[in-house]
Length: 115
Length: 115
Image (cartoon, rainbow over all chains, first blue to last red; front, side):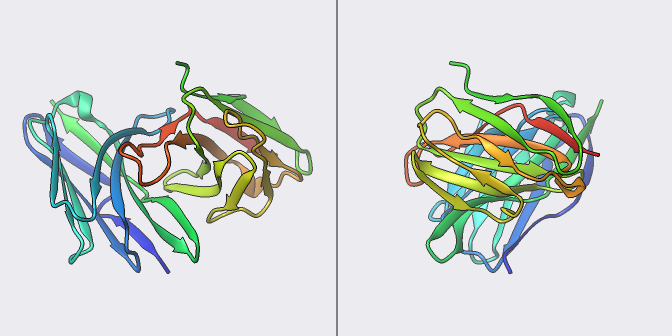
């Protein structure tokens, strides 16, 4: 069955360092991959999208890579700040079953940036 | 724009009761989704719709029903509430997959407890 795994449930990092979050998937051929941020008690908020034919995308301090051979995406936050503390969700859009394309989410990684 | 609006924000149901979770969006998005999120788990897709009159099952549709009579509204119906349906429910909307912008916009969620 299809599976999306985010490398760890929680990640603690010192302020100013680069945070790297991992998203791995199996039994999937996603057309594109998205990253979202979710704060406690709130709905997810979109951050970045990367398509299957793209290797890297950047937006301000955020960078996403997508390796369809390794079936992996890396999400980087450079010069991390305490305000970056949140849960980050990986989501893949692809064929869920015959004739049905769906947006499927991983469980998320809770990032804590320590001052 | 209000974005995606969900009502109610909180609800307690007794086993066997029924209720409808409301979702409305004002961005003229064709696609709408219902997800549930259990503690420590990712978002699970319940149902989605690609336009008025068209709906399809997601990963966990059992115990739920949906309808889409207008572009703006996508209500989720629980007919016979069970404790297993205790969760936080998120509605989301987006432009069609394959569009330039396919990010999903989420509502604030409905926290449902079945006792």
